[in-house]
Image 1: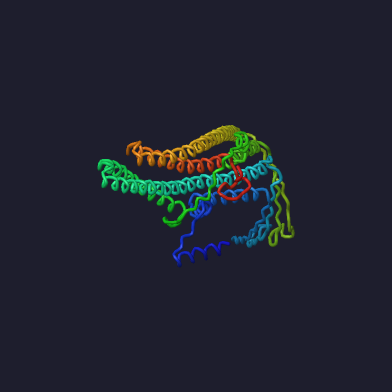
Image 2: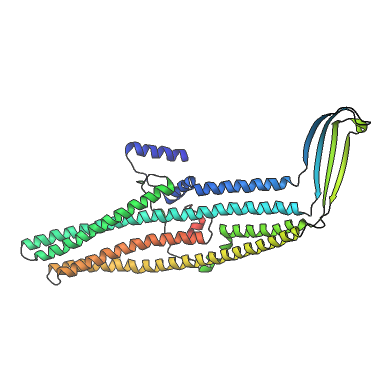
Length: 420
């Protein structure tokens, strides 16, 4: 499929066609380009390596030693030449169970790093979505301004014809030309804003600034209940990450507390070469018990520090949950407001268009003046522009609500979760 897409892009470049790019494709391009996500992936790898290191502390270690001692002369059982070759196997037996909790802690921190990357992807997705929808909105604004200027041009032509036969005044033409000049200045402003948005688009995605964008986001008219989104809070990656860090902090308390317990280690040696009275002894095994008695209160201080870190992580988790709830409520209310505005604006556009048509007819009959017609035209065009702006704003708020609710991969189109 990717090869087919590349071939289509190459073909379009050769024949001069423009292929439109969907939001999901822009997001994937931004993911590949993002240094932040690459850094997050490195942090995941580092966390995985720390897990491997924690696992290594539980497993046995095997090492080899070879030495050769030459001294002035032998002394009793110690000859003047003493070669030594041995293998040493060490196995920790008991260390207060802190090594197993350290392993669980490393696993929790690895999970937290994965969730952090997922959260960063969602934030980048929102940046790309806002940029793409801004570009589409500005391009639609230019189309609307072009349509309005065409209407003014037709109006000017009609008025000039009427001036020629003495049915209208020259000042009426000047009034429309003044409004047209204002629209041209607004068009220049929108063109500037569009160029800036295109620069941001290239920065985020690496795609060409002139890439044709497809409006692939559909705005749902039916909005489920607020509770249905609030119930998804625990699925947000930042909440899952905060929970994983809280679990790691809790396990760290046990790790610190385990240092109070005695440690038992088992060490075995196999001698391939040795000298002296032990020359015929090929192996030995030693068990070592270490009991901490007094270390100046350091161990207890580490336990207190771990408890404080656990409380800090618990506060972060609670703050993240409150922030998530506020994000959902804000996005939900914004989207509800957008949908209500769209309903009113659709009717306003319809009424404004009908009013403009009637005003134009009545002007030809001499029932209204030119200012009435111009006002009706301005109201109609303004209503259309407000409608289009609100549509794009509603689409962005809908995507924000999906991200706030923790919906899995909201940038993927045509998914079951897209039904809301």
